[in-house]
Length: 310
Length: 253
Image 1 (cartoon, rainbow over the protein chains, first blue to last red):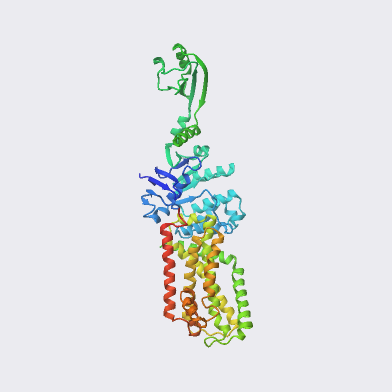
Image 2: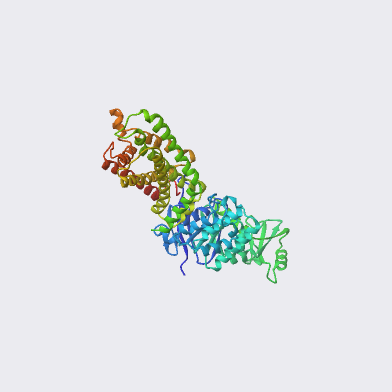
């Protein structure tokens, strides 16, 4: 099946000369949840804004279900829902009116039953006639989601949906996302909370300094996380791993002061005992032993710092 | 055409107007009544007839134009500036609508509001002076065209403005002088010859003149020229807006 969103060589340079996107390629499959992780200023929002038509690309193309977002913007945009990061709402407008407006703007005929369903699902039904300025921050965020859902998008972009949101609302948000996925909606969310990506995403993309550094299945990434590292620090640096110790799991630290052994904590035998006796047999003297678990956060930090290196 | 979107924008904008309906009506009615008291009754009684009509009646078309032009510009500029200011414009930019649909929604609503107020002022005028409208259809036509063309101009100002001061700047520095010097309170023929020539560069002269013709059957400039001037002004505003949306100037980075 062709991807529902296909981004090809997308570049965006602002008038100031700042290059926010440096040739992004990304394919998003129908029905998946993709989490885009990245530090502030990585280009997450620019990427979403360019796909949605809020900013214009310097070069490159975006297709949504085969429709070019510039040439065939009506078809492309009518499939997309966007929940922006900033709470952009008219303070004096009433909840139901603003949601109804969004549906109309996307050319859909009025559907009070659907609007009611969305408002109930987001616990906004009791507030339907309230002015938006009377709502709490979390409620306002729900209104933004209701607006985006009102026109029944097939692809939903959530830009930092849980930034500054309390734990309870965050859980609610995750449930809403799971419900939408069940309805077959493709979801792209940006976040810098790694636990959020872990909790709901199918795939994880890492973006930094305008480049996609990695897009990988979450489970594969998680299996990497299940691994532990044992660092065997040596009293004397060595230049090569002794022949008797060579294995896929073992590597030498760049400065030669330690051996790093990767093992799976879940397997029956970790191989640590064997390794230590082999190290002793090879005549190496140990100074210290350290273990650590790699997390998605480490992978993320490593990737991002590599991406930022000159 | 995404007519549903046009209608949605129009209804949404009109709702803003109806929320503040009382102040929307009271202030123009009050200010027009003041004009009639001051210029019509107090000063007007000492001014001789202009082009065969009493001074109080003579200023009615000019007063309506003054309010309608000011209202069109402020309604339309605020209507599009406000979403820009609070950020809700993201929704317009990401919706499956083109520039014509956005303009029809916003400018249509702004023009409707201005038209409402024009009609209210006309009704108020009947309370103060004895008026007869010789060409009612032409009168309505001029009124509607003025509402639309100046709402288009207001829309451009709203997109151009980077802050609330700028939003007030163009109406204050350019539009108000043009309207006052456009013959709201006098006939161009009352001016010295040099100023008569200069006045012909003021587009508002053609509007007020044409509008006054529809009331009294007499005009400073010929009706054909008036119609041409207002059509040209509308076309100019439309092409500027088309260019704005094509290039994304001040709205799309």
